[in-house]
Image (cartoon, rainbow, N blue to C red; front, side):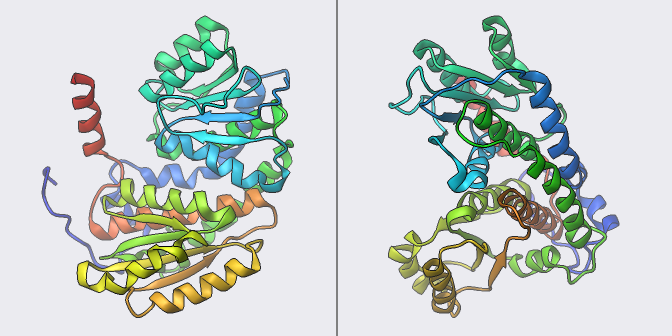
Length: 360
């Protein structure tokens, strides 16, 4: 398809492995199917790279952008009340003003050349904070090696967003190493097995009425709004960015209870300006009052939404439940891309933007 050409939707029933392969030229499905292996490999890479623990009472700051930053947010959600110190994600050129030498800064950049993350690396060094780097290489890896900073090496060949398991596990393990949370090594290994089971249920060889395929068909032709709460708030953002990058279409995210204090009113005029759909991401540990809000909010917007869904996480532990919804969103975004007839891999506008910014 030439640049600027409109996407040509294919038959809605065509979500078999063969049909996906005809559109997914870049092979993004293969990376999603490898998610259980990524979780296990990530554990090995962290354990091989960092042999000693340290103590930073100031907690952990994860510095990154896009697919490299989401791991920190998902790790914070997975730790939940078990986090013993602050864990914060910064998506900016600088660190939070409260960062001190007693803070660990995990600089996460898949390419190793993300300019915002490089700036945070230098800022952390100037502060004298404990630094850790997770990357495939680039300038970030070169500086870490020169400075003697612990470096967690990642495998190359992915789109950064496909390294979500590596970035999440790295943040979880570094949080444990610096005293910000407990070790979840065994839970991560169990979550990998659980994810494999869900792939059988939701993957390309699943029935055509499987949850992921049905969600993609229902959302096709609309601008989805993904709504999270508590544990699922960063997952809702992950769904948004995956639909943006893989499906090449607008998608938005919000959280409850905040949504009910502003955005709820906007749904009254939704049909006049576009076709909007809603997906509520729920969890068994969601606050009872928030569960009541989900039910009421969905009922109030239903007449103005093209379609709405309520999806609950799957699994026993928090990490299982987090990864379950991450996997579901990733598959939905890929199936949407296939239904729209667009290869989910290339990110031409992002690459164009980076090129023009570098020249400015």
